[in-house]
Image (cartoon, chains in turn orange, purple):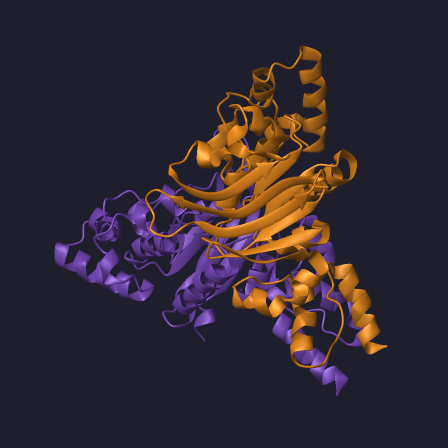
Length: 284
Length: 278
């Protein structure tokens, strides 16, 4: 039974028309409903291409050569009618300005909902829910170009959330944020995971906030899927991760370095709090 | 010691935007030659505004900024940018010429140097940032972000400023690229004697590279000291809504086991563990 697999990618390769080598190749990846998947890898590894492939931007909006299949809710992305897949899969881009069109933050949020023909009451309800969730109420009347980079990223997230997509794909959603705002965004994601049973795929360089939330992790490098596992066993392969230029968070890296020196055996901490516990165990 | 030579003095600086927003309040600051400083704080805390005051783009609403003895209020932009260079967060906001060579030559030409002098400055800057020759006549937009950033830095270097402020050099870069950029800035600091100020949210990078940290919140400086000092002042840091790097947090939680609260890198922490275990 495959009912719970919301995304199934098989032998998938994509080569953009103007490049010599495929951006991603030979990808096999299944994602179950309600799981939180972190996707990491160096720049140029194919992370954004993978994100675009899941919401149908690829092959829809790009020229290139596709091999293999990408299925979302059991149906190949090409089989969806125009706009239908984008209601199921919401993508938050790393450059939020790319998605803004309106004159105020409120219009920006309402625009998408009007566009899919929601009733006024429904729009009002969702607007309240999403502005509270992303802490935007004080910015609703501002033009999107007048707010800071971090606030823009929150508006971009809110605009996508207001569409209530089942699958949420976030491409470096916190790259411009300070540590507090970053934590706040990940707090929102944690809430969505717990309360809404959304499937969340997050591409991130900053692992400190991602690691405690992710059920599974995927490592891409040079277009290939190198590693896919549950978060704990995934990071047991930290030597491989470091080889590929991915650095685990500080607390984890400390225990990894100890293990490399033969001074530690056992699991790696996913948070500072876990690290502290393990540290006490070491000395005890 | 070159770090003893004061280069910039900021006294009682306030800055208000025309719409009345108070972006800087009561800033007092001294910056010495050869320092490697991280300017940290939440989005909107005043970091970028302070930088633009330091290089004369903005003039103080109240108070004074002296750079090598020149008062920024009474000095031309040309006088200021020769002393303090500012590299934009997004190199694309700064690069606009058709090829890298002209991009780097733009500043020197703008301050009306002779073409011979311009050529010398450009070649010097190119050699410092290590831009391979095949890119010299390339359009900047065909370069990777890392290389575009080097071109952006070269275009500032060509003005030979003592101080270089780099706004979020590692945003959007993966860890390996971030370390490459920071190693390069460290080399500018150590080998070429430039004072480097980085604006960043990346605390592990601050812990690894900065010798001094200036932490801002709500238009004010909340903490200013060595990186170790600032990262161990938990109460002050909380006011700036920042936390030290994860490894420092781990060491601080492990103080009772003998770890140093001022630990800044994983390597330091491992070293301490090895010593404690023996």
